Length: 348
Image (cartoon, rainbow, N blue to C red; front, side, top):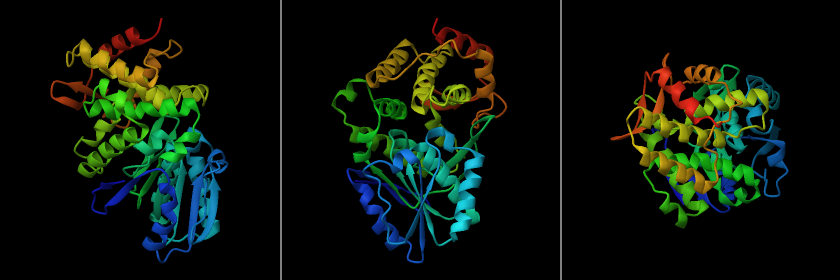
């Protein structure tokens, strides 16, 4: 199956078991002048039995740190230095193989090295397949916030191979469902509809939503693309704070899940939705076994400060919230209301 991302330079997201094996022939057909393929991946991914770096080009593998630790400016510099020493040209291609952090890094490097080289992605996590690898938003983190340094750089294609998801740990698989839950809620789908859905359905629904919104708002100019950040204002804030304490404390999808539960409660406090919407959100998150409460180990002042630095904000607190007309980007949310909801939301 394939989903079109209908931009000025359109490309497809390929979904299904075994689709990763199609990448080599695609590159041979699409890039006849290419000489080098550089696979950016992590040591953990490279150890997987399904990992394959067989292309019809001279191929080099560049390893970066596992997980969010890859998304640093130091990593960007290191990978760019490696590309320069390998003699990578504008005719060559980078292949990002890994979770959302790896494809974010690979995409950003491709965007800035030689002012832009081709990139394709083979996302190997749920988060990567349903969100991070699709749409051309690339970025790394700095101490002030997540994804604050980045660029838009669309891939030539994305291959979401559901076979590789079987090798994920239980925690990684469940955590990735935070992004699926976000898409499920944005689509207006119900908790009951989850019972008959498969992992292929979850990836397809999420990837199709991402492709449709990206095609309508590639550079996040109209505000429609910002809807994909539902749950991310709080999610990114607590993810950044947790990362500073322990890189293994909170996965991205877990943080998004907590952010979704909070956003529903904030919308209720603002009179935008009723209690039924909060209960439905909780039911969807519970189906996936996702967390939906915030521990007292976080400080409210630290959270609010981190949310104020979110890239969607314009010198105020900004959230994607549900309402009577659907979801929308809401600016100038009073910090006093946010603090009150946060205090009630945090576990005793």
